[in-house]
Structure formats: C-alpha cells, structure tokens
Length: 330
Image (cartoon, rainbow, N blue to C red; front, side, top):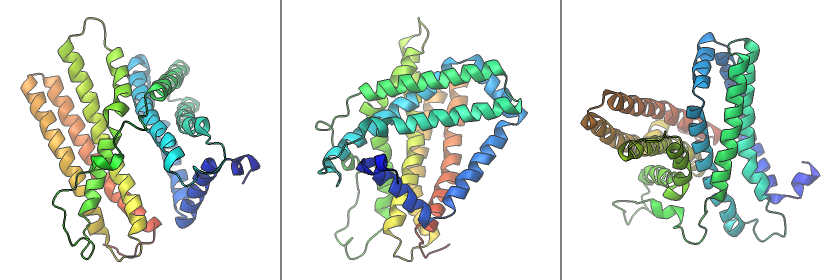
C-alpha cells in the first residue's frame, strides 16, 4: 500500500475491504472486466450511437437526470461520511478523516466512466464529434451542479432519526431467538429504500426537475413531474436496497446451509410487493388523468422496474451466496 494511503485510515479501510471482497470472490474482477467489454461493444453499435445522437439534441433532459441522481447520492454519501466520524471504530484515531477525498472519489469515477463510454462510441464512429462533446459537457456540468447541491444540503447528524427507525417490523415473535425467521430481511430492504428516499435526500434532486420546467408551466403539471420523479427514484431505490441487503445478509448467513430459493424469496418478495403497490397507484392515477401519455409512461415505468427487479435480485442473491461460500443451492 502507498504511504499516503497508510496515513489515511478511512481510505485504507475502504481499499482493504475491496481487496478482501476480491479475494473472497475471484470471479468479481474478471466479471467487471467482461461487463465493461460488453458495454463498450454495445456502444459501438449504430443503434446506440443513434440513441446518443437523439439524447444530445435535448441536453436538458440528461442534465436533469444526472444532476438529480448525483445530488441524491452526494447527500446520502455526506450523511454517511459525517456519521462515520462519530460511530466508526476509526473515529478515536488522531488521523485525517479525508472527507473531501471520500466525497469526490465516487462522482469523479462516474464521470470518467461516462466520458470513457462516449470516447468509445466516438472512436467507433457511431457517435459524431459534436454530439460527443455536447454529452461530455452535459455530464461534467451535471455532476458538478449535483455535487454542489448535495454537498450544501444539511446532513442532519443530530436532528434526523436513525436509519433503523425507518424499518417497521410487523408481527414480531417472541421466539425469534430460538426459531429465527428470514422475514426481517425483506423489512430491511424496504426500510433501506425509505432511507434512500428521505425528503432531505431527495429534496435536492427534485430541485433540478423543478428548475428545468419552462416558464408558464401550471402548478398541477409541476407537481405531477416532481411526483413522477420521486416514484421512479423510489422504485429504483427498492432494487438497490435489495441488492445491498442480499450481500450483507449472505455474509452473516454464510455458516448456515440456507438454500438459494428461500434466500432469494425472503429478500425479494416484499420488494416486489412494494413495487406492485406503488405501480398500481401510478397506473390508477395515470388512467384517472385521462392523458394517454401519462398512462403509457406509468405502464412503461412500472413494467421496466418490475423486470429489472426480477433480474437483478436473483442475480445479486446468487453472487452474494457465491462470494460468501454459502453451502445451500437451489
């Protein structure tokens, strides 16, 4: 390890965590390389270039989505970084907390990956030079704006409720210590999604959606767009939360002989129910509005999120069980 990294314990622990994860699962790094190669190959296709050309014609749309996502992730990361200064086992050490480095590493890496993808499409000839420059500037400016909004948002170290307060466990059993159940795993996935979409996290992201509205837009349309953006963020947060819970739960359940199907069902079934419940309300409101565009968007968003969950959660559970050498298999 470099000497400058050894002098920063928080960064060193992160690097060692990634190194240990890669050692436990030797397939992880080759899988990332293969996935990157597949993505690069897809960007060379004429269809991908045509899609990027159309996106470059309306730069406001990708700017809004990228800036909103970066603002939400930065606010969440800021809360975690400042909380680690209090409750981390590294907090008593008289060492630099490396707040700026820990905050800027993820967005800088994401921007570099986006620029690399645009460069691949440009070199392959599927994307014009003007569109590549436009999308590159949009990505860079969106991440700068989103990072500033997320950084300026209050992290609420003392006023906010702890994250575990957002996990509501219904029907608790007194004999869980003697007869444990997998039911709490699904509660943790839904609870983490609630944490990801707290108002103090999503507030900064929705600012970009409201600022992008043209002058003269009615209040009902503005509220509809803001609500739709929040619904999309919540549905995607459910998927991300289920993946996080799968890897965390597999680490604790590795000594057991739990099989694949019960493990996947315990984590994913309540996430799918929550998505179906939210999707049903979105479809009802889209149909009640009487606008064909609103109904088609509701059907598209709900269907794609459900398909994404049905693919991502089983794959994440399989990778988590394989990475932690769980003995059970379907």
